[in-house]
Amino acid sequence: MNTATIPAVRRSVTVATTQEHAFRVFTESFQTWWPRDYHIGTADPAEFVMEPTTGGRWYEKGVDGSQCDWGRVVTWEPPGLLVLAWQIDGHWAYDPDPSHASEIEVRFTAEGPGQTRVDLEHRLIERVGDTAQALAEGVGAPTGWTGLLEKFAAAATTG
Image 1 (cartoon, rainbow, N blue to C red):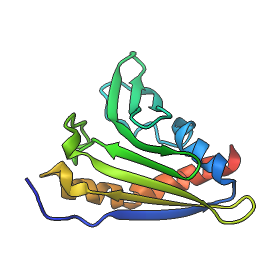
Image 2 (tube, one colour):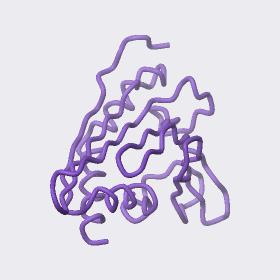
Image 3 (cartoon, one colour):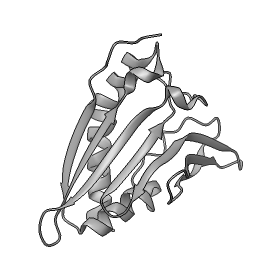
Image 4 (cartoon, rainbow, N blue to C red):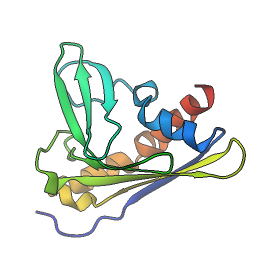
């Protein structure tokens, strides 16, 4: 198992909307901005779900009715803070062992009327073990959190 620390992936975006709306779009309207081809279940996704509570599930529902977990909601403090356990490894497969989960912290900071900065940190990536470097490269790539936050910002400002 890889025990070396892997640097956290940090990304930020400023969104032309309120802190409350930004938090709601990121969490309750997760499926409006998360790409349909970014799924790990065997079936095509019908829906992406983030349960709105600490301890809630974060998962996808397939068109065939199947469900595929991604992790858990570690901290749910609207409208300012969300922390998720990411139980997906560098092969883009679910790992049911919570001790292998990396963590995603998302902070929503009001920066004036109708302006919110969203800071995302994907950390503790080394916990996933041998595939940690692949995971870090994937989430750190332009099609990773950078592109995802761009999609989120577009959805938050139009929704």
